[in-house]
Image (cartoon, rainbow, N blue to C red; front, side, top):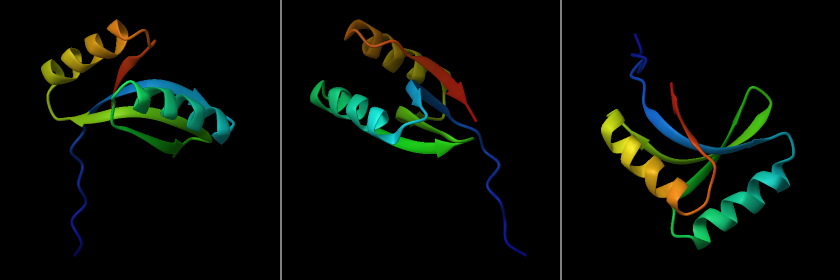
Length: 78
């Protein structure tokens, strides 16, 4: 029987868009600022995220840096 990974992770979400081009534009701005990003499609939206963190302390530190660089963001957990 195949095992399913049910572990949850913290991610920094910087945007969610219904139009993929908008997500790509934000991703480019974040990458220019030095962040490693990804776009995931979830529930019909393109979500621009930074990092995958197993602990909230590390996610909080990254969130602080993202906000200091002028981006509006929050932590998701799934």
